Length: 66
Image (cartoon, rainbow, N blue to C red; front, side, top):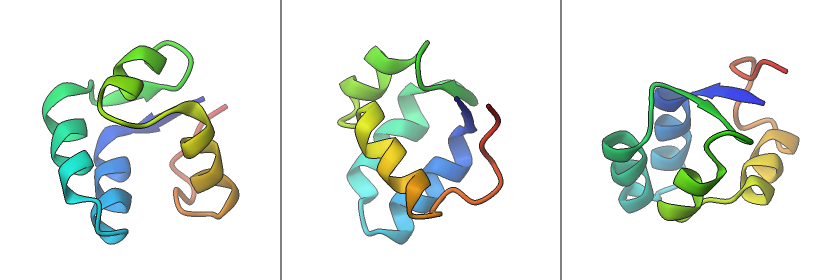
């Protein structure tokens, strides 16, 4: 699943997780693939399960591409 880094940063900031948002912004590519970038996401404190939970809650809206 792909998503835009800036959209993820926006959601993290909305949730008050500014530290993780800063790390995502500084360390991850513009377009994220949850499978390809799983290690990088884990390195900044996110895992696929957390992202899927955000998606299930509708937090990422229409920015996700299969």
